[in-house]
Image (cartoon, rainbow, N blue to C red; front, side, top):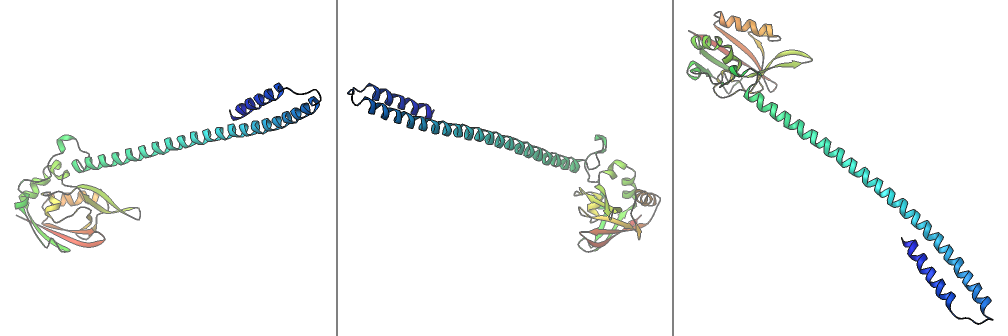
Length: 237
């Protein structure tokens, strides 16, 4: 556009110069001057064309940079949207875990508080590393007779160490639940029972069977934030 305007002005100047009356004797000198002016204008026009070409190239480069920046922004927005979606999904899974830690069908979900448990369990040393509790046999039999109630007491996940099961951690412990009444806290890991490692589901089932069949008590080895503690449970008739 700049080159076109300048070329137009130069053409006007040439036309005006050509229209000026001149004497016959000065004609040759004027022709020479006009020829020199035309040569200069041609040079200027060539330079302007070169500038215009560079401007066009620069504009094209800027358009490419703008398109690339737009594409990068779109990719960044997409990544951020996926990150937010993952966070929302984790939060929703966390809320589901708190509401239903075992992913059980609706008939097995419900309040974790056990009716009569607060009166049937007494504990001492809840703030120490050696908790001692007593639980009524009738209450224990009531709990163990209903797997749905037992399953709702906490979320149980394997506690791994060096790639092997070292015990089981408890999460989702609520007020009134059996673990809470026995002095357990979220994140506590039961690593052994009566001195035996709790390293498999079979070991867990053995303890369940022993309690159901009349064992008088158990001693739980517990790991809490890296420290060891015990929870002794005595079953009283």
